[in-house]
Image (tube, rainbow, N blue to C red):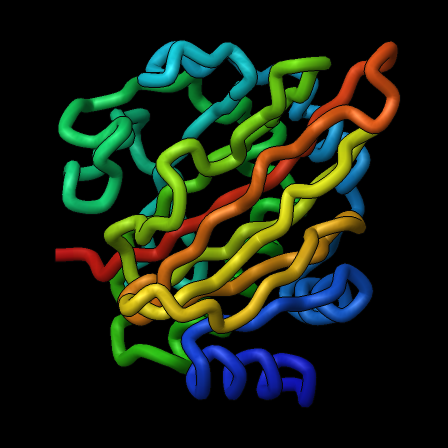
Length: 240
C-alpha cells in the first residue's frame, strides 16, 4: 500500500471520511489499473437517461446504474445481472421504499479500464477498514443539470446515509456550475467537514456506518449556457 493510500485509510478510520484531490486520487487509482479510456468514460455521461422517480417532480437528474459482486477468492469485481436500486425509507425518506429501475451503465463504461481501476481501488481501501471480503457493489452515474431559476439538487433527500458500508463520490466533470459543496455530519448533526468537488477525480470517501453526507444545490454561472455536474458514486455493502 502506498503512502497516499495509507493516509486515506487513516483519515477514514480516524474521522469516518476523507476528501481527496484529483491529482492525489489519480495517482492512487493508477496503482491499481489504467485510466487510458478516461476521456471515453467521461463522455459516457452524455448518454444518461432521465431519472423518472424524482419525488419532487424535478427533471434535473439523469443517471445509469450497475451492480457488481466481489467474492473472497476473485481478484476482480464481476458485473451482476441488471437489477433495481432499492433503499428503505429509513435511509431515503424521499425516494425509498420502492424498487427503482434505471438504465444500465453501458458495457464500454461499465467494463472499461477506468471502471475496473476505480473498483479495484475502492476494494483495496475499504478492505483495509473492514474484514469483509465479499461485497455487494452498486455504481451510479449521475448528471445533475442546473437551469436559471431551477437549481440542480445532487442530494434532494438532504443529509443522509445510504444504508451501506462505504461510499465513494468521484467528480467526473463540472460544466458552468457554482456551489455543490459536499458536507459530512456526525449522527448528532455536527458538521465534521466540507469540500467542493471542483476538478476531475476530486472525491469524497465515506464510512456510511459512521457519518452522513449531503451536497448543496448547483446553479449555472452563465444562465445562457448548459450547466451540469457529473459524478460517479460507488457503494460497497457487505454481501450476505
